[in-house]
Structure formats: structure tokens, C-alpha cells
Length: 362
Ligand SMILES: *Cc1c(COP(=O)(O)O)cnc(C)c1O
Image (tube, rainbow, N blue to C red; front, side, top):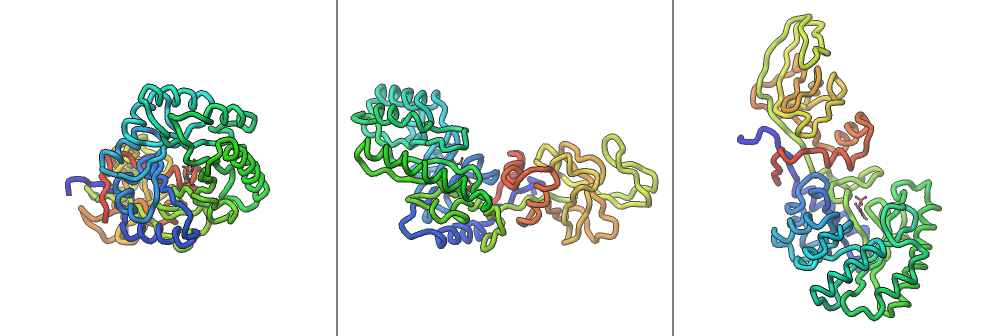
């Protein structure tokens, strides 16, 4: 095999997950697949193609990510959640739909639309209901309406907000107050513009935890990859990160392994060198027996420090040979365990696999 390390993307798991989410939604609910950041570290085009028949729209974070999909011949609507003003011309030329999040971004987009002589160009309006990341503030609603009303260049397709703590059912009151302030702004904008506008606020765990968050449309990201920030019931893990054993040898009691000699063998030890390292997404903080690779279904602890391109594991007592597969993660549990050990969340672990690792769909 030319590529010693691969990120396997399971078709069966993706199909299962998209069906799972569809079954949780009302038939009329519009489903946006959020495939930003290489579809959470996997491959945005592979995922987009696999779910094409079952989703209504796509969303990415930045313009470039939308271009990748257009170049891959994706024809459906693509929202750009966080477009930069300098990408507005390309957004229009490639028929991407910007989510505008401030008076500044709206005015600038209208200015570019004038230059391109657009008519009713589809835009989406982001309302800040407390996350304080992006979005129009409550006191800007009138100005927002003034700028859009009677403007022939643009047309508002949807209005949305983002939840602060959708995964946490203890914060129901925060979510409910976000939903009610969002709805009252959306009412006002709809009335001011005098046409029907699609509403959405739910991400993956918003769907699971807050029935009143479903609205007209939902935005599913991590749910496609097999996580719901709860028990992942009915979901399957999509991505597995695997590599190979490239070298095996035995070291004597007292010898050290890897940079800085932090692992010292207490007895004669058989070690395998794996063809993957921190440049591929194996966090260096998992070294020195903080995590393991699965080799022929047995745990081989990482010994010593993880190197840039290689990692050494202890295979004493494990039946294996050069060329055998070593799995870093292959289940939701693996990914959650890694997250805990390095002090982060599944979202970050999923996006850690570097682009050196070949993506393959199986
Ligand atoms: C990333 C993102 C999502 C997807 O969230 P998940 O928790 O992964 O489902 C939805 N909406 C916005 C605005 C986002 O930035």
C-alpha cells in the first residue's frame, strides 16, 4: 500500500446516520448538512456525494470550502456560514449563499451585488441571541429591515441563530429564552419584509434535546459523523484512523525508547514502530502510555514520546507482524476516550487528522 496511514470513511455508517436523523424529523423539515472543515476532518466531497439524495442543502464555514464542493459538481444550495467580505465576488460567481452576520457584512454584500447586477440574490441572516460570536444584535433589527426592504439585489431565504448549550439539557432555560427572542426577531423581520422566511436554530444536539428548536430547517454537523453529544444511540461511527506496523524489534531491560528517553524498559520488551505520528494527528500528549493502538484486537500501549511521523507501541505478548494494521480510533468510544485524555471534545479529535493521511471510502 502506497499510503501507510488511512482515514477510512464508512458508507454504511453515513447512510445509517442520515436515515437516523431523517427519522427524527418531521417530513417537511429542511435538512442542511454542515460539512465544514473537510466534513469534520473526513472529506467534504465524499460525504456530500454520499448523502446527496437525502439532504436539502449544504453548509460550509468559508468560501473556499464551498468552491471545493462546486468543483466536485455539487449542484445543491450551499450556505457559507462565515464568509469574509473579500470572498463576496467569488460567492456570487459560484452561486454560494452567504450568511450575513453584521450591518458591515450586509452593506458590503449589497455593494458587491450592485456591481454584479444581481436580482433577488439568496442570503441568510444570522441573529445573535447570546452566543456572542456572530450575528445581528437585537437592537439592529430596524436597521436590518431598512437595508433589505425594497432592495432588489438580495432576498432573504432564511433567518437563523445558534444555540449556546444545546447539548446540555440542564440549560433548558437558556435555550428556551434564545428560542423565544429569536422567534420575536424573526416575526419582526418577516413582517418588515412582508414575505415568508425559513427559520432555523437547531444543530445536532438541538434536535435531540429541544423539540421546539426544530422549526423549518435544521443544521446537522457532528450527527452525520455518528455523534449526538449524548449516548449516540442509533448512530454509527463513520471515521477510522488506521496505520501499519513498519518495524518490529526487541529491546533489553534498561534501554529507552524515543526522544528524550522517557520510556525505560523494565524488562525485555518487543516494540513496533507505526507509520503515523503527531504530524498526522496523533497528539503528542497521548505518548508515554497515555493511549494505545489496537493491533489484532489487543491494546498496544504507546511508549515514549510520539514522533512527527512515527509512534512506538509495546507489542510484548501480542501476536503481530510487519504490515499488520494498527487502529488509532475506530469507534465512538475510542474518539471519546482520546478527547477526554487530551482535554477536548469529539469535534476537535475528529478534525485533528491531518491532510497527509489518505481518505478512502469503504
Ligand atoms: C458547526 C455549526 C453547526 C453544526 O453543529 P453540530 O453540533 O456539529 O451539529 C450548526 N450551525 C452552525 C452555525 C455551525 O457553525
